[in-house]
Amino acid sequence: MNGAQEALLSVRGVSVRFGGIRALDGVSFDVEKGRIVGLIGPNGAGKTTLFNCLSRLYEFQEGEIRYEGRSLVEVPRHGIASLGIGRTFQNLALFRTMSVVENVMVGGHCRTSTGYIANMLRLPSVKAEEAQLRAKAEELVRFLRLEHVAELPVGGLPFGYQKRVELGRGLISDPKLLLLDEPAAGLNHEELDDLGRTIMDIRDRLGVTVLLVEHHMSLVMSISDKVVALDFGQKIAEGTPAEVQNHPDVIRAYLGTG
Amino acid sequence: MTTSEATAPAAPVAKKGPNAIGITIFVLLLFALPLLLPVVLPLLGGIITLKPNFMIFQLTLVIIYAIAILGLNIVTGYNGQFSLGHGAFYAIGAYTAAILMDKLDCPYWLTIPISGVVCLVVGFLFGLPALRLQGHYLALATFALALAVPQLLKYNHIEWLTGGVQGIVIIKPDPPFGIKAINADQWLYYLALVVACIMFWLAINLIRGRLGRAMIAIRDHPIAAEVMGINLTVVKSMAFGISAAYTGVAGALGAIAIAFVAPDSFTIFLSISFLVGLVIGGLASISGAIYGGIFIQFIPNVADAISKAAPWAIYGLFLIAAVYVMPTGAAGLIKQWQAKRRAAKQ
Ligand SMILES: Nc1ncnc2c1ncn2[C@@H]1O[C@H](COP(=O)(O)OP(=O)(O)OP(=O)(O)O)[C@@H](O)[C@H]1O
Ligand SMILES: [Mg+2]
Image (cartoon, rainbow over all chains, first blue to last red; front, top):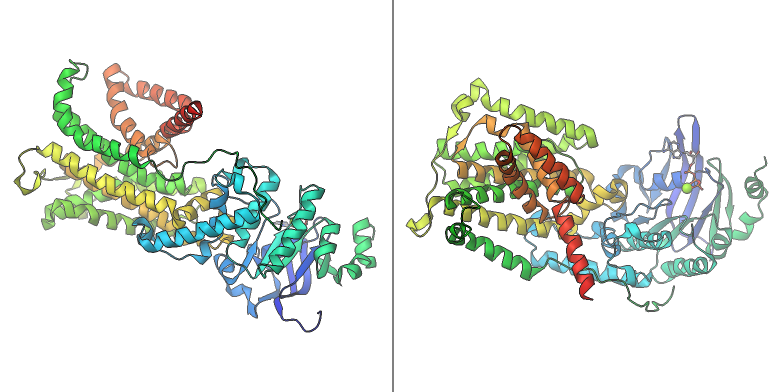
């Protein structure tokens, strides 16, 4: 099943510099439709920087990123979500005064369209749209087993819960591509297994392609179809989990020599 | 995570939507107030020595200020953008109404929506470039606006329009359809109350919908909001415009109620007062605007009654006490108190 697969996302020679630091240095790889692609690398390798390029939060100086054949440079920041690219953040980026359900509902902003006048008059179209969005948010909240905290402000919830809220917020817009930045941070063993199953579910049941940044090697290696390894902004390996795991450069990068 | 094993819903169920019965009773009371006051005030036996009509006039101003503060709350409380310049929009609303009546014989009631639309446009256009400024810088830009507008109103070359330093005198409207049962002050009170009900209803609807959530999302985490597909420029500028429109409507009502506009009524102090009312009433609280309106209308009078020599020192004491006793505003205090009562009942 590794044959000719259509690339949903293709990253070509992308470079990002911050002053003297080359956070990304000519990185190229593809994310095929329907896959879980793992993105690994030691701290500071440039994984989050790549995500931020995909979200258009960072400008890249060289290279090209194509999504469904279309260059992302033409798309404004707020236009990325409606293209079908959802994401979570490494360091939580929730709307802390809002409840869990409301946070998830904000994720559906790009799939709703009623305007100011209709909203202020709360026309039937607005009521219908709201009801639909809320129902969907509540369904996701159940899927993520957050129903007992659904109406509480997220600000006061434990870290692991907040991570799950981010997941729900990223999923409600029915993305085609979901970018997960260290979703397993702060989870215990059991929760880790759980998360692995959830991510597989997201791909299999919801049909979402996943690009996963994660330090937990066991998780990445067990669920990824393909793994890309970065070090100091450069791609050092790409292949099946087994190939990447045994790649000498990857081992060296993680052992911190060379 | 394949199934949703039902976890015991032990957490408190948050109240959904506004308390309809409470609000209805409150609004009915407000409508009955002008009829009750002449009866009740004498019974109080001189505790409040004000004439009923003057009292009604003051309550009209409370309502008008509440609308203005609600407007400020939309941009500052819900969208997180500080404005020190809403006095300017109040002035623009007031002058729009006054000029329309004075020069074009426009019916007074029609000037209210027109002032709102004028301020919506001005606010949106001001917001568009200004919103690129962050935090403190936006506060300074709006501060400049508040300083500039009263001066511009005095400007020689538009004196024919604005009446210069003298301002414009307007005729106080009588009750419509020749109604004799209520006097002009009572009618103005009802006018302000009806407009306020509409404005509050519109604001509640806005805040609880997708665009209200977008505004709050921008306040809480602008980057995440943008990643969720929210167009920051549009939503922030609209928040500014709608906010200005509210304050403009309040300004128009104020002009009609006072039957006079002059540049010196709209100094920077007015802008600061709105901000005071906003914080005292409660940031990001719809009902907070009402408490804020009460505070900025009555506390200066109370301070004046306590000490003619240093009323602003007394006002300052009230402010400090209020901030100390209700760090989340009056609305926050009431919410806490209600939560405690609910907990006690269970
Ligand atoms: N906004 C920024 N300004 C300056 N330097 C940055 C910025 N963002 C990232 N960097 C630098 O770019 C490099 C890559 O950082 P990045 O956050 O992408 O690493 P990462 O692979 O996500 O690491 P981690 O596993 O620790 O999250 C680091 O050296 C970092 O200091
Ligand atoms: Mg990172």
